[in-house]
Image (cartoon, rainbow, N blue to C red; front, side):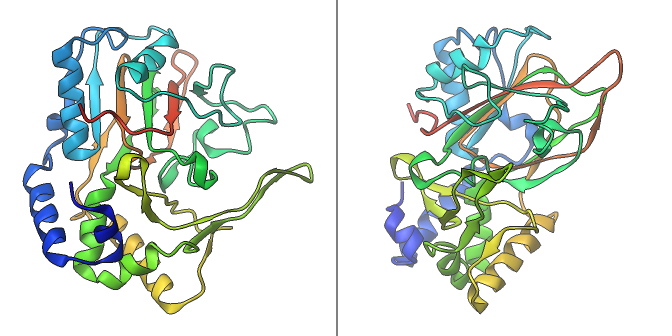
Length: 294
């Protein structure tokens, strides 16, 4: 693994070139390369666990396929996280008492303010981009109990691949995006009471265990970017890369008993439709640690 200080500070370009070439050589090219069949995510075999870790090492993500179907057991993501060494769960405001979030259309006052609990599309983002520095999300699990009757596909981009695309275009973009005040998420207030303070930090950052991590949202409203020409150019470069079909990405719709495990990759969700016979339900578990390397 490359020295992260060299990667973020743009020192030692020879080391970066070796890391880049190795990353590109091992990166999966097709969605099928991310898929691992598992008997039961609650009880992985050694081979299943290593297969999931291998995908995450190569692409920062894996998709597991099981025959559990629409089993609503919330222990599925919880036990899976334990087996991958993820440890403590992040308790976000919309989560249940066990810190597992049930993602479905919820019209109540607590949830309807937030897009994940609606059927609307969600733009490119990493999870917890609004969290404080000591609570940054480094991994999450998304387990499907029931997909929507139609729609609800996820786009997925490995942050390390985005880093390479931006650095090859201009190292100045990386310098701007690693600035400690590059992106500010304004405070969140509910009924005039501040529920969360402003979150200020870089876009590319030092993740857990010395790995490169990303903190980003493609929301256009309320996000405050550092007011200088280099940051504005870097933001436009990110948006250009996200719009560019040549940027390596995967598109997947999770089916019953399937799930995504990842080191907080960039993701988006297409709009979806429920009907009387089928309503979308996914479980989300967020973690401060990365998926174990061994």
